[in-house]
Length: 480
Ligand SMILES: O=C(O)C1=C[C@@H](OP(=O)(O)O)[C@@H](O)[C@H](O)C1
Ligand SMILES: C=C(OP(=O)(O)O)C(=O)O
Image (cartoon, rainbow, N blue to C red; front, side, top):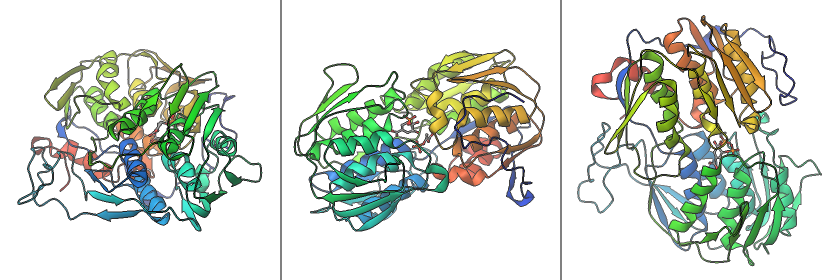
């Protein structure tokens, strides 16, 4: 067992030593031959939840096409609805081709059905006035707990924001301090954590503030998304030593720009937003490239091929970096139009990787590294101890539980090559832990995942899609 000195205090990597009920175990399917599959995935969580917020604050109705439908997006829809925003599920596209070709619904001016269409489009109608007197459940969604408080501050009346027990420990101090500094009346009893109540007056003064966003980029994104609606706009400085997940901040700035809002950055770690209208706009959501990580890594793990359709030509999604990370493990990556293909090599190489910008990809890449024939070091990801679980502790515990040799570093993992064996892999209520375990289970017989249901956070179809990747490769992978 590794000595853990850095873990989140409440983290218990081995669980409570209670036996896991066998009916809650999901036997991870084994790949009996190299995977050879076409895959289609639903919309990006990060884009869906940003566009929901921006559409709610915009100057007219917007339609989101091919949004994600999952726990995280449902929590965002419920939060905005309870503040008075109109969100309507539009009738399903008339002709859905789940295998990727683009078709226009008959007799409709709506855009062609995107290849990654997995459920209703959404029409969002902003409220004339956001209303409080409500309680919002952020569930496990970091995007809800960090994007909604500034929106709630714009509402009239008290808004209490809470989260799942497992998520109440995620950092919120930067947001609490920011809102106080912006003149918002927020009662958190000095805890700097959820739950807290914001007593909105229908307006936020705005101004110049400094925060430490080193524990999550979502504080910056959350403040920028609402800033155009602050009376004096926002000048935001980040003061901490590091700033993780920069592409997610770029995604926020790009989403604002597409709605006519300019965010200037006169210096590194400073953003300026003038008070202005947020434009109404119809937006097509891209497939979730972070959720693509375990699927594309499956090609590498099995020495096979996986092709993902709907790969965007230009994107701020950090998952796009998989195209340069997977070759480090020995894969070949090629792009043909919107189809990205990953082919695994004869062996899986160990890697040295700084994942500061893409911590979200760490569970899948660490699982792949645990299957490599050489040592790996993945660093720059101390902040992922603040994700759904302490991911560094959880990955070390679960990989070591299968016979691996993983050492926790302060900001990463060192992974030595070992032959892994079957056993129980706990998800720690973390969707990316569930999918990382499934990846290892492809090539290590007898891996059983506790709580595959955790994948509902961002990809409720994961078990079916994963199974189909193995059993229906010729037809492609998709759900009707
Ligand atoms: O803004 C976003 O959509 C996200 C930002 C990142 O958060 P952190 O900066 O906390 O890592 C990422 O890990 C998370 O999954 C989604
Ligand atoms: C860290 C993640 O989620 P959240 O948006 O809840 O922070 C994640 O999806 O990997």
